[in-house]
Length: 99
Image (cartoon, rainbow, N blue to C red):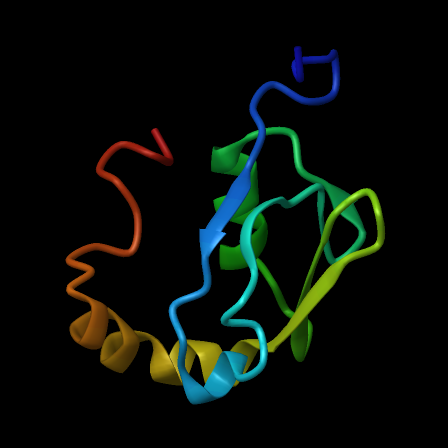
């Protein structure tokens, strides 16, 4: 069981949608994201909130074993609509995620 008093859901990076902004990470599949910029991830809503509130130049996704993905935040935001169009993603988040 993965639930603890500090972790209510696990967040899994299923697949990196290949783009210039995340070059080199396309082989990362099915890995647990335990930290964003050093902050422990307790559930998906908090994961999404950490991304929304990020003020750092980079976003560091990390698992407990130290495996990392480092993304330039501004470039990712600039590339987002093209990535979504290329992969048929309709919405950034599911309706009601932040309610």
